[in-house]
Structure formats: C-alpha cells, structure tokens
Length: 214
Image 1 (cartoon, rainbow, N blue to C red):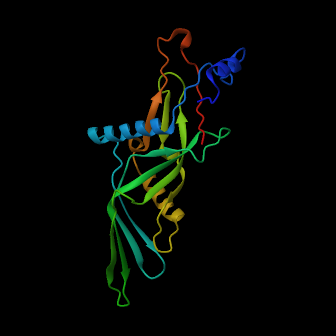
Image 2 (image 1 turned 30 degrees about the vertical axis):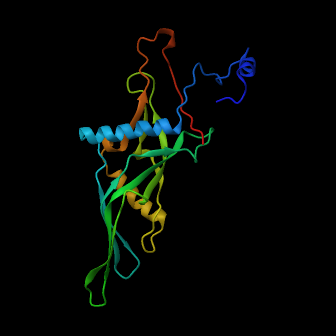
C-alpha cells in the first residue's frame, strides 16, 4: 500500500500510467496464497485425489554399515515464501513441506555382522523437520488451460533442515528430490487459478505475466 496521503497519491498518478504498460495489475500476498494452498491440500484429502503419499526410504551413510530408515513420513500442506524472489528473474518462490508424522530408525552392523537398532525417533507435528525446494511458478496462455501452476517437477535446490550421520542437508534433499520425481503428475501439481477470458468483451485478457517479490 502507498505511504502517501490520498490527495498526494491521486496527484502523483494523474496523467501517467502506474501499471508499467499493463492494463491491469493483480496482487496476491503470501498469506492469501498459502491459504489457497492449504484449501487445495484439505480438498485433496477430502476427495482422496492427488494426495502425496507418506514417504519411506533408506539412507546409508559412512563405511561402517550405518543406515537411517525413514518410515511413513507425512507432509503438511505446502507453503510459499519469497525470500529468493527477484523482480528481474523468472517467477520463483521457496516451497516448504513440514514433516508432521513418521519415524526415523537408525541401524548399524556390529563387529559380528549382526544388524541392530541403535535409535528410534518419532516425528512430531510441532517442531518437526522440514523439506524445502526452490519452485518455478509456471503459467499457461489465456484461454483453455491458462492455469497458474505450482508444479513440483520444475522444483530444484532440494534441502532438508536435518542431517543424518555424515550426510549433509543437501544430500538428504537430493534423495527427497528422487522421491518427488516418482510421484504422479496429479500429486505434483497445485493449480492456483486460471484465466479463461470468456464473455468479457473488451476486458478479455490476451496475455499475462507473473512476477514475485521478496
């Protein structure tokens, strides 16, 4: 919002375009966008369509038979933040998934070759680990299929905010990238809206562009 008093704002706008050459500008803040993502998340669970299934994977590390077994890691609704966004770049945001359930079991091999459990950690919804990625927000043309889309297949720079043995956060993130890549298209896509352009006469849009700001 402008910090100018209304009279000064009107005076500053008179006789020139304030929309950088566009006919219309529409602004959505971070909170509203995340509310929409949460609604999509709840809708998926209510309908049983496109749910990101709990993840299970093994993470070996070191050279002495250490393995971390991740069982049924459940993810929360995705959240967008914009600390990596720059006006001159392609529209990018940071997408974070909280891990709200599941278990991490640590095993190792004794000198006699017997594998045993050395630690069991249950993941709690409060203060649990997180997975985050840098996300390109894709878009289509106006008309049929003109969707503004978060599509996880275009995400990169995966990281987790926890470490396992000698594995760094980046290495753990790459393992999760492989898991995300194995999901179906329906599970990886979150439509934020679309521009149909029907029955709007002279106001029918012909093109649009997305920009993100930190």
